[in-house]
Image (cartoon, rainbow, N blue to C red; front, side, top):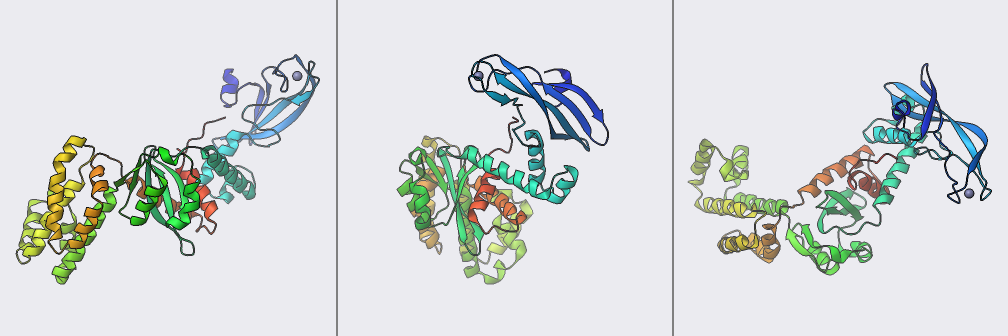
Length: 396
Ligand SMILES: [Zn+2]
């Protein structure tokens, strides 16, 4: 590639001349003769030459227009004809792949169709067509990949009419694996029973939902369920706030107190701690609950430890749960006890559905930008194109 054409980003081109007016016009032709397209060998001769004009990337605010010499070859060995193929320019299209990509990325980043049709001199329908084409191509590249080894499962709201959808996330690679409409076993059955490589899944991270637990046990035979730290702590906090409401409905409404109660004890300043202590003086039961809740939160936040250390923490957790079982927090103790294995497994991992929650925020944005989706399949395509791959397109 000579210096002249390396700036074009297209290989195998020789630039003849460049002219600038309102646009940048580049006249170019192929660098050499290829071997035959059909038999792969054979001396080819140029039978005729035609011309082709394609739009290429913008430089600053100027549009680059390529005027290409396109030879038509004749293979003397197999006696067939073909036109020169340029890498990065597909046959019959009037723009290079680079140009189409530029439009896709700009539109994806939020530039409107009408603005793009002004800057790139294409119709707004073309913007839409190119955009859809890229989205479909991305999803096609994703299809056929096998199940992730570490899977996160969570539900999210899709629309008022169609209800909830289930998100499957590849937690190791930080990508959405798929979204499926529905959150019950019945609505996921068809999808899951056809899912390839289900037995490769080793770990499933999920909230404390019985439906998802049953689904995982049935469809992912080799997977171990790990509780999701975020959801477990949220559950504990939720129960605690309810108990507080029972103990002292007036104090529960105090926003300052609420903010103190919600925080981790070890993050409080000395005077904040004193404030809490003063409040607790009148509510001994609440104080006991608060202390136990803080101990529980400390235990739940443990991560990335070895099995032998986990064994050391387990008796502490069990003792704490027994203590809860004899307090007003009976129902919390019951739930946590029934999930004790997934919760203990949580200590060995650092992965949580925090990633999934992040994707849900992103999906909400996608949905808003499209003013909501009626068709779930369109929504799924969009989600996979945005969250299913790393967003970097390898240039052709
Ligand atoms: Zn040939």
